[in-house]
Every structure is written in C-alpha cells, then in structure tokens.
Length: 325
Image 1 (cartoon, rainbow, N blue to C red):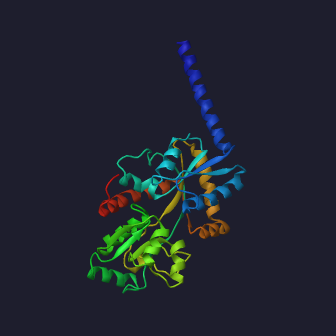
Image 2 (image 1 turned 45 degrees about the vertical axis):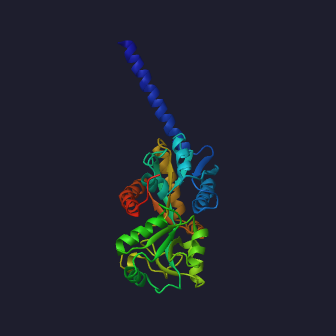
Image 3 (image 1 turned 45 degrees about the horizontal axis):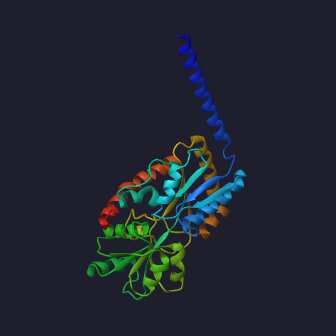
C-alpha cells in the first residue's frame, strides 16, 4: 500500500513538474528561432505576406522567424511538413483556403489532417476583382448577367487554377445569378491575363494587385469586387454583393496555425502579437503593398470561419464537377 501510494505520489509529482516546465517554456517562448512554413514558392502572395509577419515578429521577440518555403501539391507538401513537426510552438504554418478547406474536397486522401492544427489567427486577405474585356458588349455586372442569360454557355471565365478561390468565385456567381458561364483554368495571372487581353476568355477573377493596373490603363473592365466590402485599394469598384447578390464574399485569406499540441499560452501570446501588428497603420500599409488587407481573428473566430466555409466550399466544388484526384 505504502509503495503504491509512494508510486502515485511520484507520478503526480512528475506530472506536476512536467506541467510547470511546459508552462514555463510557454512563458519563455520563443527562446530560439521559429520556423514559418509557407506552402507556396518564394515571391507568391503567401510568401510575401509571411515575410512581412516574420520580420515584424522577429523584431518584437528578438528571435529569428525563418520563412521555409515548401511549395507543391496544392499546398499539401508544406501543410504535411507542419503537421509532422513537434507541437512546441517553434513551427508555424501560413495557411489558407487550400490547406484548411478546399483540399479535402479535391483529393481522395490527404497526408495531413486539416482540422488537427491549432488555430492562431487570421492575418490578411487578398481582394479579388472580376475582370472583363472592353470588347465585349457589357460594361457592368448587371449587363453581363443579362448577356449571359441570353447567350448560355457563350461566356467563359478564367481562374488561377481548379479548386482555387478564383474558380469557386465563378461557381458562386453562376449559382447566385443563375447563369451558364464556362470555367477555363490557368496557372495564375501570367497566363490568364494574356488570355483575357487576347480574347481567349471573356472574364477572369483576379487578385486586385495584378488586375487593377490593367483596369486603370483601360485595357480591362472591373465588374465587381468578390469580397463583402469594397477594397481600400480601389474603393470606386462596387462589390458583387452590393450589385444584387448579397452574401457574395469569397477571396483568398491567410492565417497562421501551429502544430497540434502547441501550448495554449504560446497560441495566446502569438495571437496578441498579431493583433497589435494589425492595429498598426504602418504595418497595415506594408500589407497593402503586397496586395493584401489586414484581417484579424482570435483562434475561436478563426476556427468558426473555417467551419462555416467547409459546407459552402463542398457545395461549390461538387457544382463545378471536379473529379477527385
């Protein structure tokens, strides 16, 4: 009995010690370099945004926040690497719709569990605009919808890839406006913009950063912003939602997550730092230069947003007729 009591006491003491040690390590975090895995190539929007945060957080904490680009397989390579890392707060993932939501409906099997990460914070979003060629016989979204209904299947829209927010924005518009427009996937603006300028496609849901210069030059028309609010980068362009399609709100977003098991104290500490950054006008302006706008959320709200996006995305992917890979 005595031995059992002693063993129980030793076990309880060890557990308490481990708990205290964990709490202390969370308080001291970060005591060494932190890695931010970016599941896209250097120079991509996700990479540029990650570097802004990495630089600012390194300055705040006095420790390096190293950007580790692991592109490929629709963000799955980087997401898998982050999922397999120790849950100690020293590996973060700059994630988005592909990693957290869309991939589960595009692939039969994922090498990681998108629901297993610890949500830290939403950090930004990239406004998208629906572009069209000036040579087409419509100047507004309403005129385009009227034309599409009179000519079903004649209009096409480009996207920066099957299953991307650019593609799903088109599917959402088809559903809400009840029009028949045909999807043509490309590998980004470097392919889609020339196709639109050359008349190979009718429209294109593009990021405002790459599309806006063509609108200002008069080479393309902007029919509407895909977010629920007008973009601060082009406040004169109305949203699609305000043009008769309430609830139309779809665009790339970016959020930081941590490996499962990361101490909640670390998550809270990092979330507070991100909130301070996103309240700083100078930092927000830096984000705008990368084509993004600030979007903060605490872990609970971040998780709730992802949960809300899952059924909507599943519906749009099924509507698109994409075959699981």
